Image 1 (cartoon, rainbow, N blue to C red):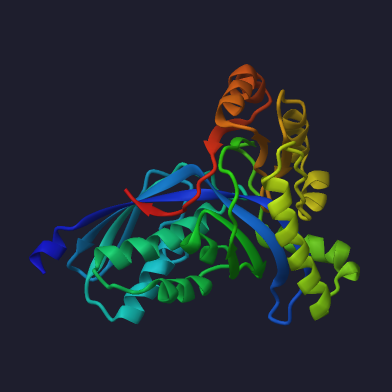
Image 2: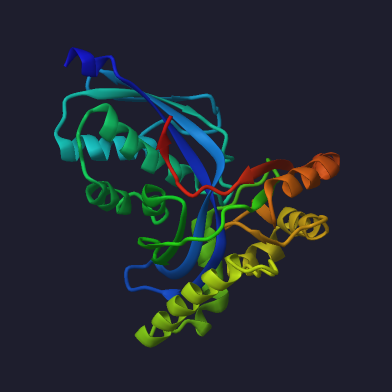
Length: 311
């Protein structure tokens, strides 16, 4: 136990973007039936873990805008894995926050998954992948994706995952107004209010949409002519109601060598894809002052073929 008590673990907890987000309908459990492509990017938070002998979960962070209490997904994850493992040990957790909050990049969900993976290692629990995956499903719709990581087709409410393989050469340029955050739940609510009449949840319809996305993903992201079209149903709502999103999409649409652009998740972060990281960096350097003058934070990222990892 003495060696265990000295253990310290650091976890890289990456963000995601949506390369496809389609709202099929409303399920009986209240969640939306979705068809998505989710992709990890190397904009990441870092979580540092060490054991405490008090049996308590203590979370600290360099981000002052984040609750560190029981409503934080890291704390929820820690309490969940501690409860099912019936362990007396506690943990001191420090979150180094780089992923913006309320941005459509699922930083909170990533952190939740990172806490499960990190504490499983820290406490030497040896819980298998499927157990961690099952725990993640109770924490939020995006959390299972981060247990898998990389590139995934995501169906159901996000818990049905299929590994997606394609070339990882794209560069990503992100734009977000730091003063704007958007509620995912509220965005889905408004989308349902406006588009619920088009919902069709018949099994054959859902299966057809899933199969079409499987085919589309292979064709779109493994082609040579680089013609890519990204669909995000939630953008139909957010772009019309949020000036910063509309402005970000306009700025991205005018970037040299931009292959495609879209909003991620429920926004407000928007992104552009480039053939490689060098082209993304060139666009960033050429337009950094413009982005800043318009009130946007900006980042350049690579796509990741894996997700959360111990560093």
